[in-house]
Amino acid sequence: MLCEISSWFGNNFFLTWMILSLIAVVVLIVFSTVIFYHYYVKITFEKWLQKSNPKYPPAVGVRTEIILMLKGLLSATFCPALTLYLMGRQKLHGYCGVGEYGWGYLVTSFFIIWLSTDFFEFFYHRMGHTIDTCWNIHKSHHQFFNPTPFAVIADEYLDQFVRALPLLILPALIPVNMDLLFFQFATFFYGYGIYLHWGHEFSYPDAHHPIINTSFQHYLHHAISIKNQPYHTGFYFKIWDQLFGSVYPREKCFCIKCQKEKGQ
Image (tube, rainbow, N blue to C red; front, side, top):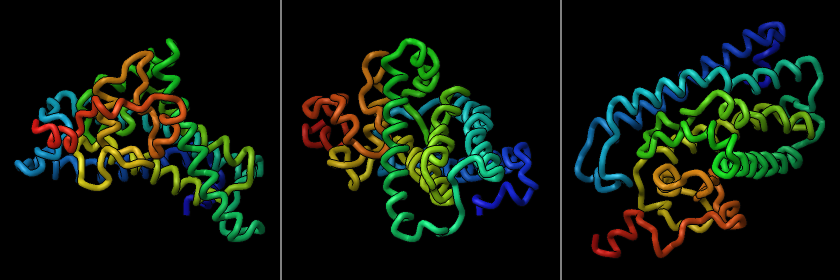
């Protein structure tokens, strides 16, 4: 559906931009609100035992998360809207349906998109902690040291824009199914991002999963990562932090599972 959305409005960039922004607002608000209500409003002792930080964030902090998320959405949807507009003018390699490339290429491109967007997010996020100029922009997100699902894209405008660049870069470089690209980005960045900012830990996947980052890794990142201390800047796959040496030491782990093992 998203693949054809621009053509519905005569390939009008502004209308496409506004429609994508509206869709993003509805999806993010609905999913974040449902989780927030269940875990931060309808609190039980059992749920509290799952919480990475035993304290709950103040109302003013949650309100700031929501405001920043809403203010930055136009920046986040600019690149995808521009991508659809340029595709409509046949300036990119994006396509709809299976196309002439077939199912084999579609499956292959799924993994290309997944790995490349995840590495892009990791590396840009790492830059936000290791380069002065980038840290000055990114540090706003770290005011939420005890985040909720509303913090998923509670970033500055430039952060929002740059993080969506893969949606423009990939179809500029290779043929890619636009519905697949948008679906994967929405799922693994925004959808999984809501989970990472959940603030609660679960028995599976636990904090020591060998392949993927969990909500604890991202809570840890918010809680202790500062300038030149980029622990767990990866989003989905742990391998990037493992390769760059930014995994938090296992012996210092303070996840719920480790605290229970230590009798704390």
